[in-house]
Image 1 (tube, helix red, strand yellow):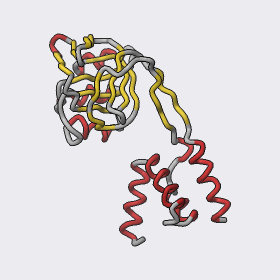
Image 2: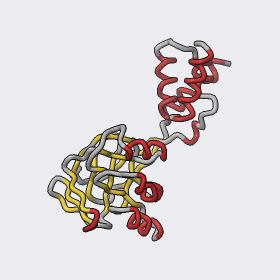
Image 3: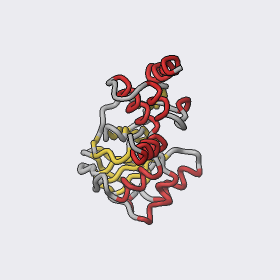
Length: 202
């Protein structure tokens, strides 16, 4: 690997530690790199902070969209930045629901746990800002109709009012009505594999 490629690998590891871990393990298993090189690629990654989050909810999703930024979020529906800030000031998590987003929605993004929009794709404003902020975001929910002035929305025939609980799975692009549980788990098997590399490389 040349120096330029090495720098790109290090940059990717800093930006996406979970992906860097998975990639290093896959490469070592395939024999493309040694265990020592795998450890080198993970240098600077805080493995202790790596966790997997999954959503546990009994309900079926009420809608789907495009994954713009992965992750799990649970919060109260807010349809503008002012409402989002009000819920957040009261200690409540927020899902910002918008027809689309503009620079005027940045304050809402800052306080929201997750974002959902009716239009847009992976390069939409909402998608780009959500990824920069590391927040779950689902865009292009074509069955979603948002009325910000009325503080209400309809998603595939289901009414959503301001303050209703929503749960979203950014990676799957699924939206649920109700308050799900977020389960946090460490990737123990993968971490144990990396720990074993130390003995091999010693």
